[in-house]
Image 1: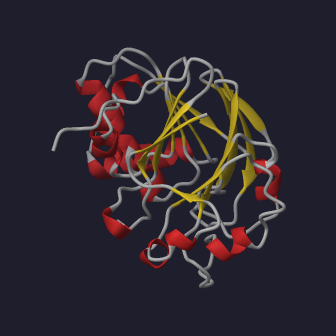
Image 2: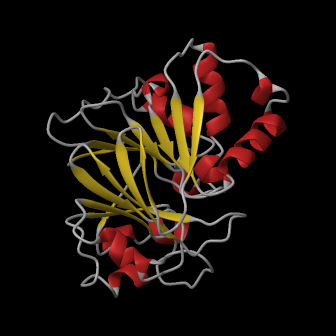
Length: 256
């Protein structure tokens, strides 16, 4: 089956492509978290799950053009694609730097992942730099020209998990990553052009994850102009037609 045409950047905003919209376990045949943001400048990713390279290529998106990856937390379905992204760029002859921004400990965990998957790969000399910025909850940072405001999520992952409010292409995009409900979600989403929110289960209480019920009961508190649900389990996928908000699927393209 041929790949769909690559999405074109919006001249006055951002094109958002859900290259991967799934949970860790491929529920519904979906690929892991990989959300491609294309402003008029170079594209960035929100998360880079282990299946990100095939996800991007299915959507006709060039991995070698990505300027930065913002990682919400250090679980494999959200950052496990970074070793493959880096090695693919090395073989493709990339020379432009790649920025990686994630929780404290991202640099060490990335090195460990590369050594686990491809021994010796973290020490190979490359033609491009991998520039790691560690983001601290409660702080802000500018990465690849984009401002990130960072909040602490409730999702144990060996390092503080993050909720990110990103200013890109003149738009504001809030992303929960994986988290139990926490009041900072409303702060991150306040007035945003887009809130991308986990909705792992419909109403079953699963530790450290958002349910559709959490979001539906707080719709008045969530003032983003648009909300799209992602990272859905089979339970949630079976009820997505009843959802309070739009739901993502692999290949969904939005223009902001």
